[in-house]
Length: 324
Ligand code: 8YV
Image (cartoon, rainbow, N blue to C red; front, side, top):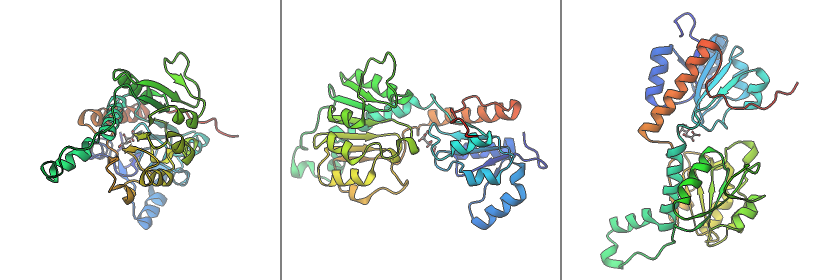
């Protein structure tokens, strides 16, 4: 645990208040100032004292910050996605990185299915219709798209993708997927490319990790292959989708609809989407339940405790082999 003389834990970026409080109270953690001059002064004066950073996928740690923290040995990430942390730079410096896998899988998969149902059945739009007093005036709401027994393609069949597939099996959906590598013994049909997958399904669900490896994977070609009767659901990262191409396809009705929990430049959401009842827009809430966020906080602190006690992490992420 940190003391006044040796306060070795640094919070980088906002975290949920209970976690921030625990870090300050129990670990004497410092917070990295956001104001540039203050930040530079803090790093010059205190940077060498820091051995562990606690951050989230919203902020992360880049190579420049690692350089300013010469004794940093662990980046402890609140959240399963760690695409804002430069893992290649971490590997090159021997810095371990941890995330919070498994504990949020159920809530994120629930959100994917909820978003899919809302998007195809237009429940949010129907709710707006009732609240606007349109039912007695304009009559029945237009017919929507059935969810059960649709063909669903999942991009990224990791823990979360598999949990989404399991739920949708119960809806009688046919599941296929695209993944970096074919998953051995998977009961689902493998598509060799995102275009091939999109061309064969009604609904494309994005569940792949963010970062450079998946940037723009859902391209305009993929959206064209999904076509005017196809729907896109994204609970992963906005960066995985070419957002400009997605907005054009939705506005021009070249795509039937989209359910989006994530965006390219959060919290900014393209305003062209606001008027479309074919689109459901959520403010990145997939893991946002009391239960899951408490479990994420606990796993974050377990990683920190283990690191401070032994130098090891409980749930380290795989790091790329460091170049010599
Ligand atoms: C956020 C998420 O991390 O785990 C992830 O990758 O996207 C979310 O759970 C969480 O909102 C904290 O930023």
